[in-house]
Structure formats: C-alpha cells, structure tokens
Length: 295
Image 1 (cartoon, rainbow, N blue to C red):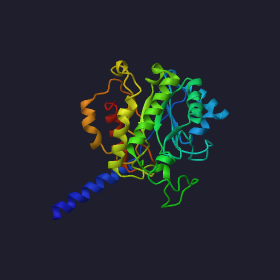
Image 2: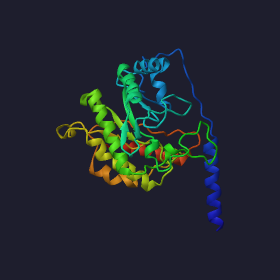
Image 3: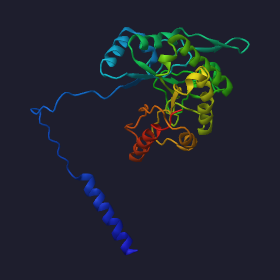
Image 4: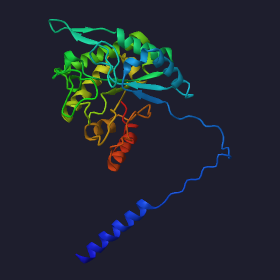
C-alpha cells in the first residue's frame, strides 16, 4: 500500500512538473523562409440563408481566392422549414412540405439560390443533409425558438423523422434535383454529410435512430447516380461533425468493407473550447478514421 501511494505521488509530481514546464517560442521576423501557401480550403457557417446576400456572395469569392485548390463550403439548416430569412444560428429553405393529404411538396427556390451562389463563386458544397423539415419531424412543436435557447428547450427540427422512408425519399429528391440542375460532373465532386454533431443538441433522438437516419440516406443518395457512373463517381457521404465522443461501432464494418477511393479531409470539429483532452483525441482519431470510410 505504501509503495502504491509513493508511486501515485511520483506520477502526480511528474505530471505537475510537465504541465508547468515553460516553453519558449522565438520568432525572427527578419528571416524569410519563402512564400506562404494556404492549405485551408474547408469553410462552414450556421446561417445558409446569408449565402445569397451581397456580403455572403462577396465572401464566397474571397474564400475561393484563398486556395489554389477547390474550396468547399458547408452550411447548416439546408432542409429546415421556414421563410428563408436568416437569423442568428438559424436558416431555412422550406424545401419540403406536405399537402392536406400528406403528399410531399417540394419547393427548390431558396435551396437553388444558395447552390447557385456556390456555383457562381466556383466553390463546391459539402451538402449537409439537415435539419428535419417540420412536416417530417416526429416532434414538430415548437419547431424554431429564436437563439439563444434556454436550458431544457428543444426545437422540432432536431428530432428524428416521423417516417424514415419519407426522409429517405426526400434525400433522394434532393440529390436527384442537384444532378439535374448542376450536372453529374459537378455533383460527383461534392461531399455529403448526414446531419451535424448528433452527439450534441442538434440531434434529439437516440444513437440507434441516428444510425437508422444515416443508413436510410445511403440508397437514397445513390439512387440519382446512374449505375454506370457509380464505380468511378460514388456519392461521397461522410461521417457527421462531432463535438465530443463519436462512436465508431455503427460504421466500422462498413469502413472495412468499403475503402475510400477518393480520401479527403472531412469537416469535423476537434477544437471545441468545452471539449476534454480525451474528447479532442477521440475526435482527431475520428478524423483519421473518416479518411478511409468513404461510401
């Protein structure tokens, strides 16, 4: 016991010493090491409706000019229901509604404006399939609460669908529309993501329900892509961004079965201020894993 206690004290002493060891960083501004080549090309924001504003369109052009390689843009709320006007931490496209008989009705006006702006700026979208349209939500009310929400408040767009088959059909229509409007050659260069941070307040369902959501979109996304193009131009669907402890279990078997033909850096958060050191390490591991988990 005494030996174990001594070992424990030694461990904490070493840890404390290492944690407080000073680190000196010297910068010589007179020394020129050569031109700086930007390596960043992935950008994202909450309010997808700001994309079509004059400042939003100007910003897309500036982001495009930052990198010599294609720039990718990822925005939230692409499928949410509403009037298409941006708010802080909120946007909507109203792409999916239902008529009095429960039949799906699609309106591409707002979504086309967003993706047309991407095309005009020569940037590529990372299409985030989210969030849940009001007509599909299993818990639609209250659907949207202006930010910031209070503790305990949840919004209808964050819930699983009332019918996973209808969700899959909507995703198929979205993918089909994109292929018809922008062409297979362009759409095959995009990335697709199912939801955002389902381990946080963006998802008010269970892990099993998210797995079902993810699984349902796979045939839906593949549907619009002609069979002859799938071998060379698989729709690239990525694991969602995560804040804390992403679970690899539902995806490990698929990752082993289908190695990525076109690996690329997924858009994953690994630097949340509230994230623990273990959480950051886990998220970075998820990034490395996702490089080989393409569909």
